[in-house]
Image 1 (cartoon, rainbow, N blue to C red):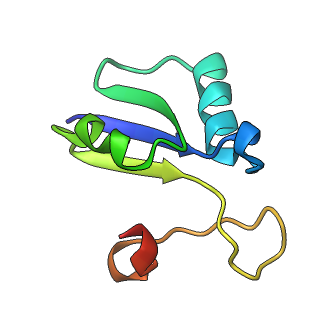
Image 2: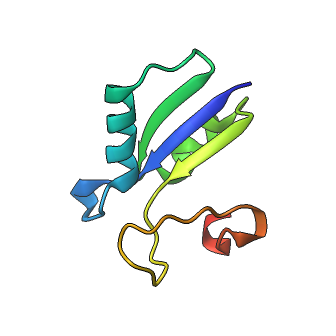
Image 3: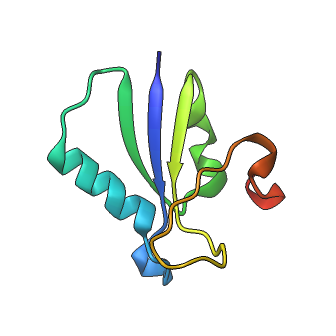
Length: 86
């Protein structure tokens, strides 16, 4: 099973870069089997589509304005994903 952990965000673009920073930390702290790929997607948008080919499971790490306390975690699946991100 091919698993992709995709971090989004870019500090240069005045973004919080949460996903990019998380991918860097995960790479630094842990070893992964060949079936797991960690990718700093920055703000590449549609340029990331070819990287999704052949992926069975996708975990996207990003920050969204959810009207909650800073640091609160959310898991969005299926129809819960805002249309802009679908």
